[in-house]
Amino acid sequence: MRSLCLILFLAVSMPGCSMFNKEARQNRTYTRYVKKMKAQRERDRKRSNEIRQRAAMPTLRQQEPSPPEISIQTSEGE
Image (cartoon, rainbow, N blue to C red):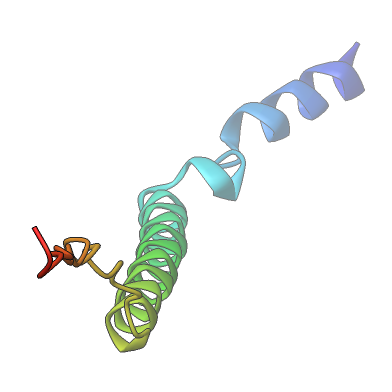
């Protein structure tokens, strides 16, 4: 009984898991923020590269059809 009380007392007196303390929460939050911002920068970089490539590509413009040339043949004999 005495050893059980001693074990319970030691378990209760420990500060707990280090992942729940203030500094650990701040570190996890900062790590999550850095990961999110890195992914955002990568998406923005890809998007800007795509835009630059589209701007650099020559556009093929369709030529407007020219009006047909009409030639009138007249007969001088009439």
